[in-house]
Length: 268
Image 1 (cartoon, rainbow, N blue to C red):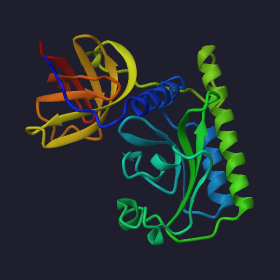
Image 2 (cartoon, one colour; image 1 turned 90 degrees about the vertical axis):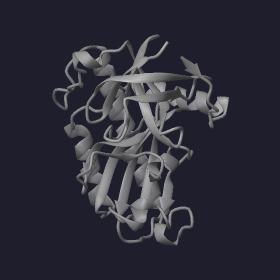
Image 3 (cartoon, rainbow, N blue to C red; image 1 turned 135 degrees about the vertical axis):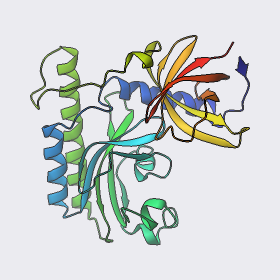
Image 4 (tube, one colour; image 1 turned 60 degrees about the vertical axis):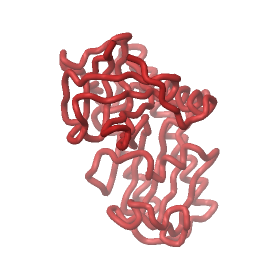
């Protein structure tokens, strides 16, 4: 059954975001194991700028996911409050010298709670066709100044990150071993094979339309879908799936679930 829901994104904004997600998908990097080449880079960022945290971050439809991280233990967080979500909209670095005194971030959950960000410097990682697929970040719980020379160094390191990602993509395309080590890709269980692989921003709606949760659609067919969320714990077995690049939504039944994945069957 198709149910019409208003989509908050304008058509052009949704199309731009889908083009960005398509570019990210081509790198086949989401949810893969740590790789020493990128870990060396984040260690270098942490040392050069004397910060507590450094990351290589990618943003899909609902989260920021850390491919490489120094100084933190979590692997991902929600996308909406993420500093990196703003960075990918910038043409160059986003520098926040003191987030607590910046009205854009003073009430941000990552400022008032862990990791208590005060300083943030993020550089958008852009594919050759111009899409910001992620960020290279330096983060600290203390405010600090960031000079033009520092900004230039972060830009150079960000360009190096993209060079590594391009080499990685080329190696995978050629089906050769990447020199950072074996790259493993998550293979969904049989219960979670639901069509062609995609990367689309979406939302699930339930509780009589009172609750909306962002998601990423990872597989899609005319009859079904597999979505990725931060947690499936409070999501019921019947819901509505909205895909931002589409103009309609689908009433769905959950046919399988894991900690962060739901297999959905579209109701006719």
